[in-house]
Length: 213
Image (cartoon, rainbow, N blue to C red; front, side, top):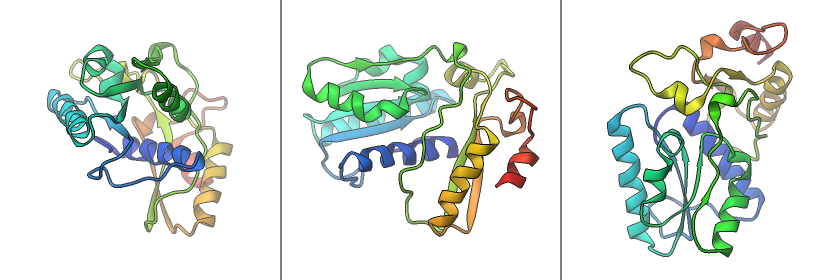
C-alpha cells in the first residue's frame, strides 16, 4: 500500500519487485495476506493519521500478519509506528533494498525489526534495480531523493535527508529496462527534482538527465 507522492509510488514498485524476485505473490491490499508492506507519508499531520489508519486496517484484516512499515512517517516517528498493533518491521526511508530480509527475520523471531538510518548523514542514492514493473502504459523512475532547503513548514528534509541523485549512467540503464519492457512514457520523479545533480561529480542537471533518458 502506497501513501503520498509519486516517489513513494516508485519505491513501492521497487519493493514489490524485490518480493517477486524472492518468490512472493503480490495480492491486492484489501485481501488477507501473510505480509503487508505499507509505504507511509508524513507531509502533514493528516498524512500521519492516514498512515496509522492503514496500518490498523491491515492488522484487523489479518491479526497474525507481519506488517512492515516504510516511508516518511516511519522515518520521523518510528516509536509511534513500532507501538501500533501488528507492526513487525520499521525501516523508514532507507534500507528498502533489504526489506525482504527484514520481513523474513521478523517472521522467524518475536519482536520488531527496526532499521532507521540517520538520513541526515546519508549521501548515497539508494539505487535499487527494477525487478519487473506493473503493467501500465506509463512508468515512474526516481532519479533524486532528499531536499536541503529546510523550509520552516516542511518536515521532508528530516524524513529524506539531503539531496542524493541517481548517476546519469544508472538513469540510462533503468530507462533501457523500461523501454525494453514496452513503456513509451517514463515520468522522472524526485523529492526536489530541480536540485538533481548538485551532489554528483560534474554537477549534471535535470536537463542532462532528460537528455540521457
